[in-house]
Length: 333
Image (tube, rainbow, N blue to C red; front, side, top):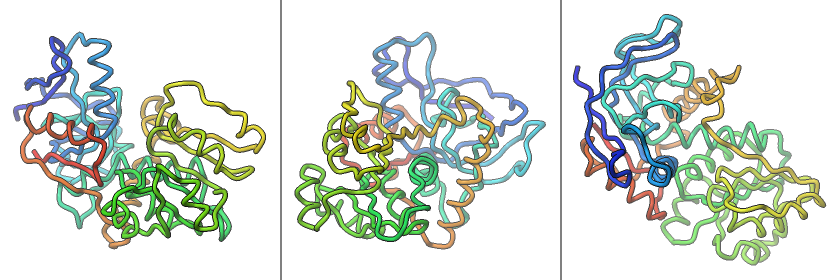
């Protein structure tokens, strides 16, 4: 079948162009899939920004979150066959899902939740993996005793929208989420947050609730901007995990005195470095699919755009860049 993709234009990296790549051939662990829907994440806009800054030799296909149907499998693939419906967050080092055909490592791929359509499924993988790894592999909140507190900075975004119910389902912590607008506050409460505070005034609003420090912080936006507040709020021997790279040096003096830990969560670590536990991502996605099919969590899809085109991809990127998204924007192909 013909392969159509929307890529960054190397002649004008601020813009997208339509291209027709060759049909790719699966490697040993690859699935060749026909993409049905893809969501746009902040990582897409960051890679696009990097291309604009650094230039490109050839068109770059973005997009990682996707739902798709398997067309063919590599020689070492197990657990998948042609016709299977899948979802995945991809590998940042490979051509992305803004393409009708794509190669994806089977080990980082999950079976699509049966209860979700293509768009609703495509909204999930990247944010689910980021939330799951951050909470349970970096912060280890599943081991926290009753009465411990978790502050999620950015509760209504794609990652926060799943981190809240994951924490509720798989730990005993009290879940506090930041949200600044009434609709965002309700979004977080609907997903299981115990309470919300405005990110602009976290210390004072927490004190009104009788909370002077928190045991865990999951920072989902603006590490630099929130750093001093996080250092102040984190309890002695507490844990902070951020998914956002810092722009400048971070003052570690308060963390040192408190023997507090700082973790980074980058969902692409396993695929970039082909870690020995790379297949754990496929397992997590299958666990998340079960939670979705059981109705224990819900999709974070908030807006659907129709058709893979320069116009729809540009519009989706703009939604993310505006920074006010609740949940996710998805393009169906």
